[in-house]
Image (cartoon, rainbow, N blue to C red; front, side, top):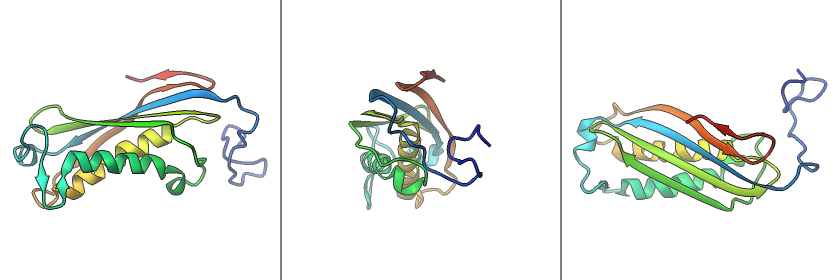
Length: 158
């Protein structure tokens, strides 16, 4: 059980104590690939779709940013963080798919991988919500961490 940082010596859940960690600049980039289908993509004009709920990608970007800021409310062992910056980009990659890239930056004692992954997911869920009147065949296909810098180790997945 000692391999899991979120379990104490008795095997009970705990929040990791980061008080002795050094403050460093940390970033994480997550990517979500979403199948919208050509039925949905066909409604986009100039890389945006305006619905009764508003502009889809612009709304999803804002939702992704909110998701980053609320990560510690959603995932029990995540520390509340003072986020320095969030960038969410959404790109149509072909006639059926979009990619959502969420980059999160902090100067702190813990990483922001979960925040980046949450932001990408929430943006996709927002796209789904706003386009479900056109089609409910959309699929959030893959969400993954592309990159993490700062802290003990750097990771590049992609």
